[in-house]
Amino acid sequence: MQRTPWPARALAAALLIAPGCTTITDVDRFQGSLEDPSNPYMSLVFGIEGMEANHVQKYFELRLVDRNNAPQFVAVAQPFDDEDEAIFNIPNVALRSKLADYRLDFFGDMNGDALFNYEDVVNPQGGLIDGDHAWRVRNLGPDNNQFKRRRGTNVLEIHYLHNYEFEDLSQPALKPAGGNATIELTGLEEFQNKRLQVRISTLDGDTLHTVGIFRVGRVRSTEITGELAGIIIESQPYQIEVYVDGNGNRRYDNPAEAEGGDFGWYFEATAVNNQLRVAFNPQNAGPRNVSVGEP
Image 1: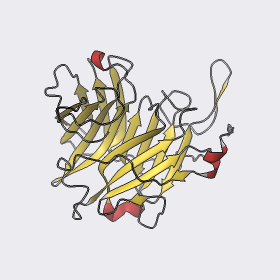
Image 2: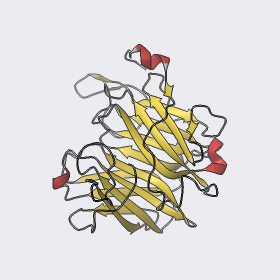
Image 3: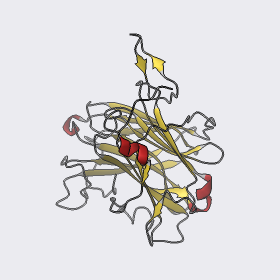
């Protein structure tokens, strides 16, 4: 597969572990996930940098995959953020008892089809398009020193640097255990050029479990449709949280605080036959001052 040269700093360092990342702040909604040792889930802070040259305004996908090659969580950015480091704060996502069984697969789409393609392709004009840029982090368990675990919390933290040591994520083949979540966003006129994110969670006993994130790095249309594949395994209510960077400063300002400046919504949607349709229009979605936590 043809590769394009990359600056030496990326060749030297595929993984950066660093403190100071934003935290998952909505502790109450996620049942004390940062401090409660009885919580069965770990939260994940995932950051990736060095994407500016190839991936801004393109499709990006992050998966948490179990030992049976079934996705347990999927995050999609469509389009990808145009920041030095894109951060995903993911509360209650990985069962702590099975951390060593999980891996992270993630890729930046190169040919615009929003699907993983490892091989180079030829476009209709006869030009060559690189295969997707893809990476894998194996084993989220405590013996993997690629992760930092925040002291006294249930948070795993990883910061990844774009490199050209790509992996074929089609091997082994995914075996989704569930159906898809379809996100339909309308009425977005007032949010042009703002970041928008939809987070989907299900209840596992008394604990919320995050199964999907759909993020729009910068809203460019008044209507957007996205899909998260294979994450809906029960026909039950799911909790939906929507965040918009209302003041455009590219950081989370709690919508529930008077000086916040950002917007947050909360509602439920019920899956039918293992398919979930999330429809959101801010014009009729109710109060927009819900504390939804870091995106």
